[in-house]
Length: 588
View 1 (cartoon, rainbow, N blue to C red):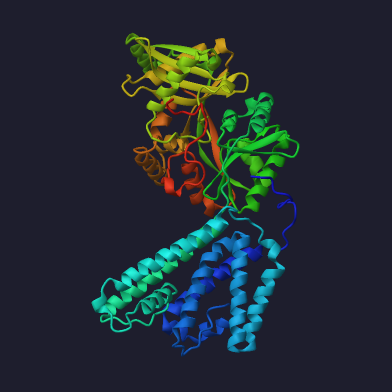
View 2 (tube, one colour):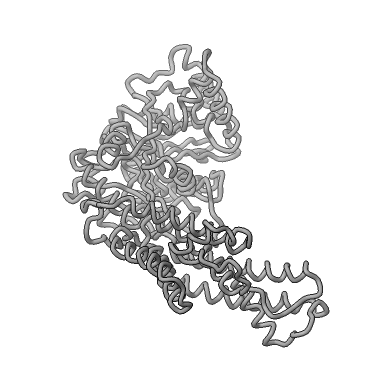
């Protein structure tokens, strides 16, 4: 997506409460309009009737029996309620919709020659929105405008066909007026929530036709509004020039973050600081702009990259979030962007100099490694650049076949490819038995003297314990490779699992741990913690950074979708369905 000219955060917003108040007003007024249209008793309430002077729709005459204004009130209520959230998020298209509704209301008031007060107050509200129009600057998906229009007409045509089918399904229930024109007119009015000219023998069947038609019309309006207002979701792509620039930053500042190399995933985008000395890797998922790991580069330039990130989020009304940042980065995000942080889990880091299989604490790992070696397994630890192309293809096929899910998982802590020539410094560990590769580990560089685990796969028929054997082999060969530290798997909510099983843990912590153990049946929560703990690592906490607590559920869903733990049906996905990358983890 092209860079957006101008600065959103640099200009002070004098009235930040305007969008919140406008959104809340739309919610309340929309609910009142819907209630007044559906329940005549509500419409006769004096206080509610007097509210009609302030916004469109609510002002329906107390003794109104004409269905057209009532249906118009219902439609206005649904539209206002649907636009409220987008207006609160400063969406410009939502502002346009509310302004249009107010303009229609004023026009209707003038045509019907109603009291001047109603016109005046509606006009005041319209003028206020126009005066503060600069507060509603967020852009929606530019590709969805014509898609929304096209979808509306397609669904409207389908609604008419379905409506005619419903009306004509039981001709014996129709009482007079059963011509094609009457049926067509009845369907059009029904889609707008208005009772048509046709009559049916049973009230139950007539209500069924009315509710079905109105439901189809309401669904069409809601789908159109969703497409019209949904946030932009650009296709994440790392260009060759950007990749080269990120690699340059990693050469200078790579040792700061074990997750830095994962910024080279080609299904991520990057934002650079004005000086080009720092960048942030991110992807937009379901309206959430999701950064991964710490900013890359000089920490003194991190504020510039964070500012660019927040400006991009503000410009498109995306929810900003950071997955897996360190404590230092979390403090900077808090200082520069006002974001809070929650501990997400811990990263297991093993110091090569301190690792040994000796001693009672390592007995289980030592026994498992010895048993696997006696069964005829051996390991090779090599740089990717030293592996022949034919063997790389074989390893890639094994990695694909050993995957437990159809979709390749990973976003913040996975590279998403194997065997690319540009990744020649990666370290690959293969477990071989009878001249056949049965398991593989892939480590990406962590600066010049560290490795970070990227891929762990094994043949499904292979013996258990291969992963322990390969990690031990990598640690044994680490010194020869110039490696001093090694980052293993990430253990989500590790501290809760550890503290919850201690004596003296409180009831809340025990129940939280019990929930995590229960969820471990479907997600590798407890098993990853237990596996990592075998190697007696140093636990480095990682955090999720967010701006508002109410955004956490949406951030969690976006993170699950980004990590491919939550896979949407293909019809609901936006962007490319498969990564167009020759070295991706697909069988070739």
